[in-house]
Length: 307
Figure 1 (cartoon, helix red, strand yellow):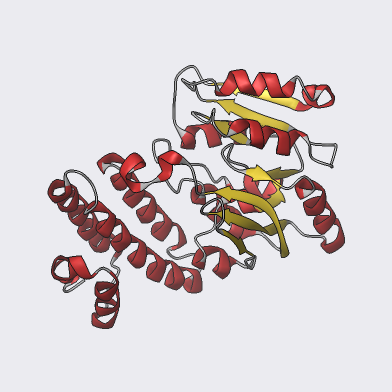
Figure 2 (cartoon, one colour):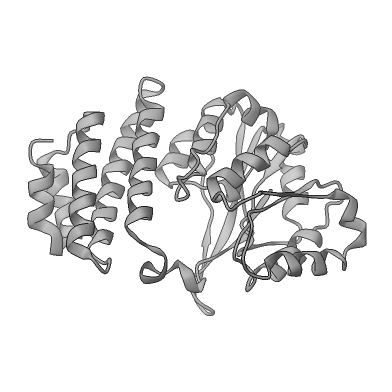
């Protein structure tokens, strides 16, 4: 399941990896989110090279650009396969990815598979990530949808949906409800996916702004409340992870062009989140995070004092 918007530089590589899969019985779902570039033209050209896949491919077009969260919801609405697998079109897959996931499911009677992936930080720097598949590990590692292969009925029963307009970290709104329901997760310690961190528009200066920053804070707020009163161990891990991420965002706000205003807005919303959730930040935790974000020590301590 793949949302498409503004990926003309990358989509050809992805499509070859997707249509060239060794496993044959695949339903391909794409959302055309009104991309302004040539992504869809490239899509149709590459699809013509794989006539055996044509009948398996379904494209849903939005009337207007609605963002990544809405695209994910549209994909969920149209999926009919027994298992779901997500990809981003600026990344790419190993050609045996689907086949190996299916084999893992069959051999282990699994309802959820989490596989390894390569992180491409530069042309020469490539890191392998092989993570565990239990619920706590999924939260601790800030997991994503594209390293998972899971039964569609988990998604149906969980009712997990993205909050439209929250286009940063929105995938966890689908993933966390699923993870709570999984009965037999399996970690497949093989790298099957290539995560592309070399995209030109993923740098802080090119893609980060006040609006995205505030939407990410909203997502963090959602994550915390989701686990509230559901699973004590998960909530404890999420609290620690949320606090760290909140102040990573606070540090990021200082990198924006209008840093004073960005920082003020970010600080205000973080204080509101801490108040709403009742999260307590211990003195020891404040000191640890302050050391990490040394330029913001004074503001950080003031913001968290008494929380």
